[in-house]
Length: 559
Image (cartoon, rainbow, N blue to C red; front, side, top):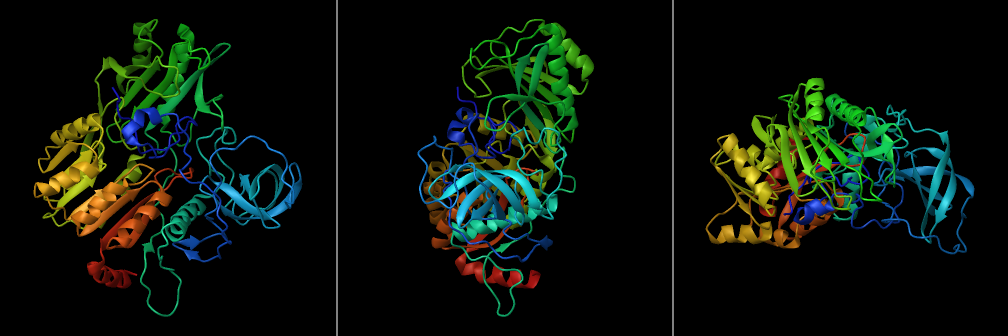
């Protein structure tokens, strides 16, 4: 059975760094895949100028649309005629940063990607690899530092692959993420974005608001998925080193809730004491594969999931008893069995070892039951911000009919149902719809209906049944909306469309389709769901072009 797995998070291990990037039609299989987007070819873009961005000044070239290709091919014969050669040292100015967080510089017009370099810096680098139009270089020395450069507080930041931009000030991160959205809207979507410091005649275009960040951008993650390995003397657990499956042992992660760290540490300690073996990817032997911990921020409840390579756990009762004694706020201890030789985290069988099969938490006033494998946003503080902006853009008065495509376990649907007359949610994963219905019952919401299927198939069927949507909300995976769903939206002709995105490039692509079909993008708000990583969420509001003049006038007054 293909159980659905989380589709909206940036996990810390290199084996699962997909943001909300999982295609939920095969979401369990996508565990363990990298976070490379579908198109990562470098573009030839001149460095943007410095200008006021939101609350602060954007560093020169804070975001450049140049990106590196997926993967690094095998070494080939040296390319003649390039301005640099392999192992050459040179000094370059960093004029931008790509969506992987690598600095982008040019040596005599030749593009070099430099991990760890920030826009506005002058750096000395060693060329490590060259291709025809771009190359890769190693940062050797910072000749002139960016004002946004800070010392990364994490002791294993240089080794771990979880965070990419801890060396950038948080204000700088927020400005860069906004500019990343702007660059994609302009470059991929060919959309007109309002220039906030433009003088003279009135403009019509998309207003991109400053990125909504966190007051405290640390310890925000409510879930840890930690791979387990073995060294002489016991178990280790942490995150994979960049580009490898070598586990970096970790005692604390500064973006995890402290209690998650405590549970992982205690499991390693007890497992080592009891002689529990760690799974070996190469041999397929060993028991403990991953430790998964979930923390409910509002209720304080915690769930521990032991992912094992087999059903039998030696000293199970002693282990569970020790965990309960050491960590009294754990309300659920579960086991997931995964005997496949794969880097997919979860297997098909999950059972409760002790306590309940779910823990409970709230987002706003809506309560959710969280099971071992069910999706739940990993940053609950910013989730409330994201959903609040979604409700705001939906413009609900209590009389509207809303369709929530890609509804998952109903998180956005239930938020919308508090303000709408009727909400219809559709999701292709049956287990997600089961959870959505359970969560609706948990909150005694009777004005929401969920159905299993592909949005592009179910929504036209609803239309045939006489269901007309005033608002359609989409929250797709990283690959963006299915083209047939976009066609369906254009056929349904709702008054407003709210697009919740985890990938600025596919957002821009899909907005272009909707704009060509009769809608106008009024406003986009980036939301920082994953501080210190390169991921950025966005919420976009679209209205029918026939009504867009009214919204534009509202923009002018509110601006």
